[in-house]
Image (cartoon, rainbow, N blue to C red; front, side, top):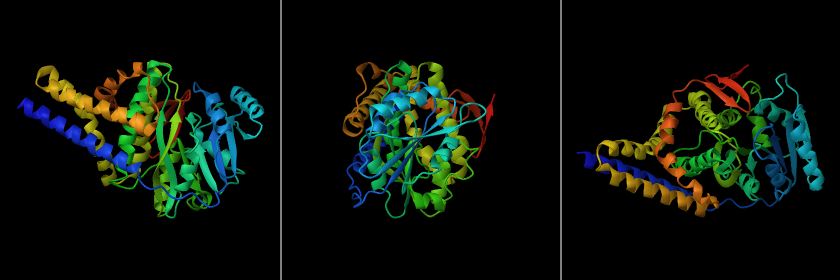
Length: 385
């Protein structure tokens, strides 16, 4: 009986890995939209908040970004963030062709939420394309052009896929392993089952005309979910959110276990409180159905602790997990984790799916950029002093 159960669970996991890997392979081999004859002007709005991330590396790449059309870069800082401001001015001197417009936001707490900074950056933005990007995103040379190319007729917003590259600490390496093992196999296969109902908020682009027609960021001053709410507005306007093959790197510094746990909690509390309340039963079912197979290796481990016959089934699943990860890194992400980080994949395969499941039932408080928020259902929040 236990032999049949473990074999069935392993077969289900292998089937899930196989169809998702095939979907990813097909997705990245599809014909891409042609480049525009005349590239539209782009306003790149960049909220910046003081934190542990390597802002110098991030902005150095922004200063050299080869977008083929006209581009203005707008960087929004907290008025009290003198360190980031000094760095921006230093880099503007080092790269004379890069002259970003610096905007300041002054709030009573000293640290303005991201949405307030985005709204401040929009004032005076002149591009035909509005693009928002977070301050821990290392843009690859082709990323922005790929987002713009996919803004075809009927498409309201375009977004890409993250590759986490920070291996400076154990916890940064664990987060990178978690994301790189799951992101492609989560977001890409979903597009073969349904149209994306949200967008990934790291970096995304919209035509100015569409952005203004759907209301832009109006009414979001007291929200944290600019990406989820914009995606809803795009769909309500009869447009599509487009998952593109644009890949960007994320240098997310996590110095401690507490920082790792805080980020994991934020990643699961945010969509639970902000995104899922606005989705249909069918969308929620697909989201859950495509995620549950990640629990199977951990279930096999629990079974093997009591029934040794399950060890072989678990070994087969782990081999499949590692093979798919190895292929993704080299064929798609074009980045390779250091050898010391590979054992962390065991935690990603066996433990973290259960942590993610547990976080779906946690309380609604999160720690973000040095402030603690209570996130209300629907997207509004309050700062807990």
